Length: 213
Image 1 (cartoon, rainbow, N blue to C red):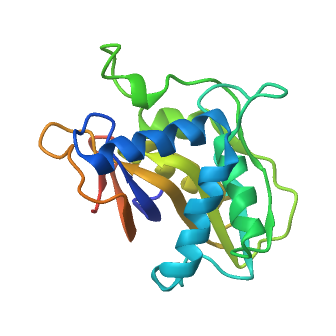
Image 2 (image 1 turned 60 degrees about the horizontal axis):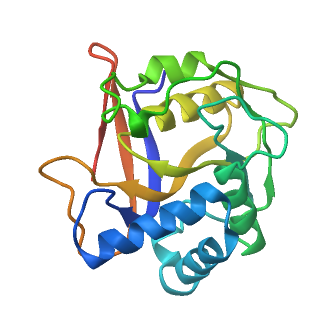
């Protein structure tokens, strides 16, 4: 398991905030989760036009996008938000290709609903153990694991670790359209567009993760 991964994000998301930006972020999340592409295309087009320099080390003509799997096992015709996002990124010329090689072998509980249901979040190790990579290409120079939303980052660390393990000679980073602000002392946001390139740290002794933003 990697002790630190690079992650990037573009939109702040506050499910419990009261500001206008928070309400708008919920709309973006709903569109993303339901597979409605138009608003997502607008967000990525905005990124490309106004903030592409922030992501110079993330996107590029040699990047292969690897969509992160859903928490549940993927069924035919089900919405796969990270695949939709990967396709939008590719259509905007921000990468070279998509490789859906990261698979969920066992369903895990959704971390985003853990608090409401009174259960512990899925751990980084549980995410890692429930995924595998079906390797079908030579190590590309650059890989970006794409997910729709990052909460604490356990899923990202597990995903990136699996992909890096399968492609040891590749530079593996991650991109999430939204990053969550939902904790009691950090749930309000004042702007929707909030580009960042940072990291998530994994602490093996405790199994916890920390988002450096």
